Length: 93
Image (cartoon, rainbow, N blue to C red):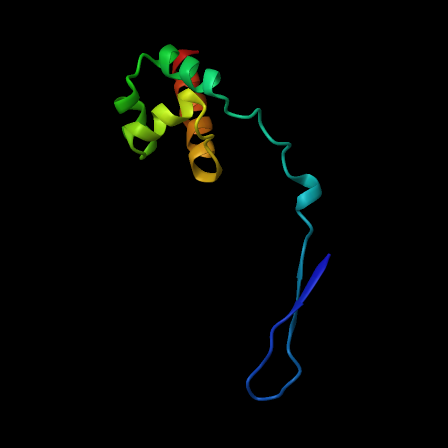
């Protein structure tokens, strides 16, 4: 457990807050989004780079840079790609 203390302005004893440790229980990381994997997903979904960019809220140039390997999606972009893949996969089943 992690205990946090919040300072008070009037000099009183601050209350303690106990937070559970969640890191050990977090899901293991998903497979990285490689250039090939992004291009395959886009092809499977029948999307153009512009269509995929619109779905993800990024520029078409960004999708192109991911597919050529210039950059890899990180953070929110990687999560949005995962969400897109899972959402579309659910409709296919």
